[in-house]
Length: 272
Image (cartoon, rainbow, N blue to C red; front, side, top):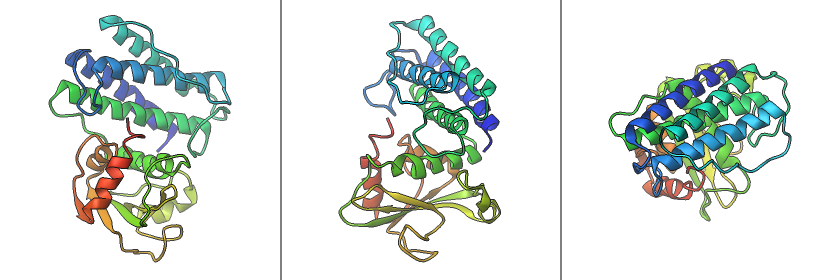
């Protein structure tokens, strides 16, 4: 996906989050974030937006801590959130494409990283706000959902310090059933091959950080092009997106259910 597409989704998702938070009420519990109220959700997402905007807007090249949100409530807190969300979208939209700043996952550029990361950060927490409000959630676009699954599996879960581990090696496959794969955002040279393939990822779980590749097998996951998985999670992109971010049940599990449960339980730390 292009940077401009991520920024536009970020804009939309932030507006939906604010609307759902207002409808739910800031004191409402957030069932997808146990122990949180909508107030906590708004404060957290608003703080993240300002944190991200500072890296791009000020060209910060070293990590920094989130700043504590102000002691606000009611309409004032929602206005503070809206102000920070608009600042972030404006900063990303007006940034120099060659801006150099800190980032924590691989990406074609720092700007591409922050636009993508904040679009998904906001979309997932918009799902939380709508869960607190009740009713049917706004649907996540299939292409964006595939993009988010890729970021989660190959980005977050590949980081050295975290998360899912197993003393017994396991192979997990994630298969989207309603769309074909888009081009690999980290390797544009694969675009033609990926365009004709299913959106599939294969994850090797071991005592080391998970290793994920696009496709049903291949180098780094231990074998042939169609390596046999211990467990497969499958379903429409939007449903898998929410499930892998621990916001809903898996749409379909085949094979060893214990592998699916291990993934869900041990991934909770990254998915708050």
